[in-house]
Image (cartoon, rainbow, N blue to C red):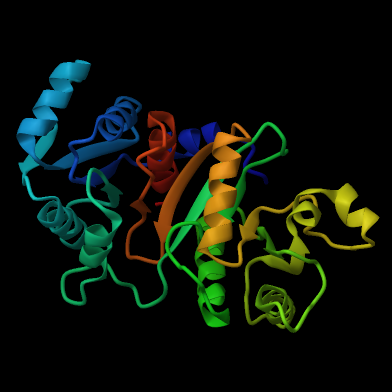
Length: 299
């Protein structure tokens, strides 16, 4: 089974029980549009936590129908994040979504030892892309959370990404550990990490996926490029998950796919007790909607 398009995720989300979505600091135009579209399609039942006056102003401006939707008035974005997290903690909601609040305060609420959603491992970001230049959805991790991950961090990031695919019904996603080169160079940590992660996978220390690395990006996404370089790999040209060396390369790849490659994306944070929809302010309403669908499809 392959995930052919983001619409596949929407259909998967529709086929499941409607999820309760807690939106932290919900006073954002694109967020509200995406949330209401997801509600209209029966994917989520939202709870909006934020500045009610601002939410009402936006709904009036955009002619959005908020009738029947619970709104918890909290003008302070950081406190709104805490209250949204509490809804998940108290099992009054299933999915958390970032609204008009900085990532820092949201994650502080999520990682709070007593009242947060900490599961014990590393939180990481995974983004799924639908590109006209690739035959199925392809994902990138980690473009938003872990700045310069060490080897053990990458093990956790990889496992989080694989868990996302398992929740979507893909039993053995193919993972490319990418870097600048496809050969092991002791002076280049990403290449060494790629080799170690591949060995760990072969020795069943990392399960439920097929890992190959180090691979340069062209080898990961193109069988022809791999063939030209004499690389024999079941991952090359059919990769599902691209594990990047650090947040710098991950973020550049993420934005290149969107703004230069014309890809549509959906993204979530994995590793917490519930999926977290965390998108950039620059992301479109469609991308935010697709991210909600992704989170709902995984639950």
